Length: 554
Image (cartoon, rainbow, N blue to C red; front, side, top):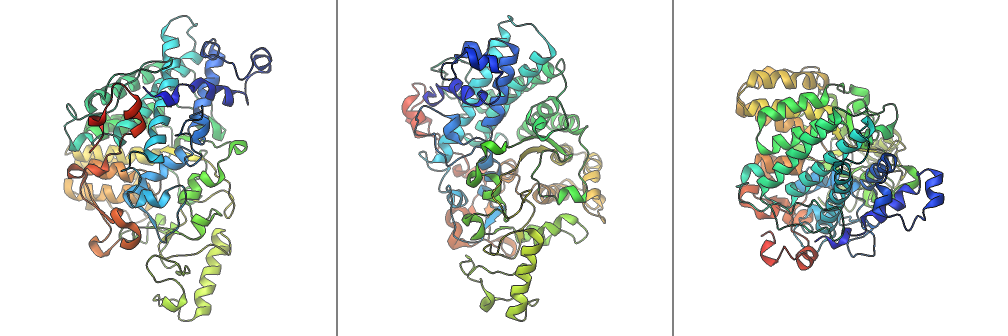
């Protein structure tokens, strides 16, 4: 199985070469470092962990070496996978027909539904690469040969947490949602324990079995971190390391996905306790640094290994200097933004009245000749508004504007091509998880109190007591997750958990063009629509002796 990760340790060599101790490089050729050498000492294993951190945002040809067909430059892993959740679910909306890396194809549902696409291939093999590398560390530690130190326990905790993260991603994309299916019988994904080529595994396990493995790994991670050295702090890179808070956060996400509401609430509180809710200045700073106080986990993107036009900010930001951005401002669902009170400062990051300057806009309303906004009675006013936005937000004269475009996600140097950090987990998500879990348990008072700190920080007129039934509170949770986590990749899994459709036409419309969005304009509820489940890569079915044509998702 998984022949495309058979050279996984060569990946470590390529990455470790930047940071290994000089004597290690002097005594062992960089093209001949065996797995035994990489796992020989605690220090070497720490370098392997650092390599895994980098694979989170590296382009896939460095993660999946050996000339395989899935090793494409078109996916820089979390740069792509994080915003894909909002792109697929219709939260991050394309305003024009501009494409790059298949980004428009995702929105049109023409990628994850195709078993030969880059998306289904690279996501599958990247996650199993993480698993195989984590297995190598876990299996080595379990041999009981290395001295047990706080540093080794930190490595062990990270390996278990990484493995859980990868399995959670796999089962949430390549299998039916836990709460809308039959997890005890629904096919999940293969479980892999091997750390040596050819990485043989069994057939697809059930969804329940995969979640059981995830929870087992997270429990092991939490236990190991309890005996580990503390994660360093003070630099953006430090939060690339997984720690006990990350493990609790993954536990909260897992429990929320499976309806284990009590565990979700408890784990969310444990995860966020050392991360204060951001204030207005930080929330409006661009979401481009793991140094933000709320960030529990994220990748600090090393500038010498930058991805430029493969980055999160190229795909999702409106200030990145690339053609896909300049010609296709990303807008938010106007139904969501119109529902945000003026007293909520998050609304400021969505430019409702931006002039539509794009003559190629999908809605056919680009240019002053098509202007319907009464704020701009003359072409001079129209052009002046666009120039003012350019000066305020730092994009270039070649960038287009569009009503409801966002400026939430911005590089530290707007108008440039630097990719900046990728945020994976924040404290605000944990407040939202606790609140949702308590509401689902019927504890509305507890849900209100869980959400109150976040709501009152964001909205000066916030009154959580207005949502005093389970139904009204859950609708409010959907709203709060929609605005707070917009662009951070959660909407696809949220809709699966809530069994909500994608309907850009409902309730006055989202602002998306049906001509542009095609199949992505409407998708029925996940419980009745198999298209929400990613196809398994055809090459996996062709090469894995434990899988066959009948294992393909419908």
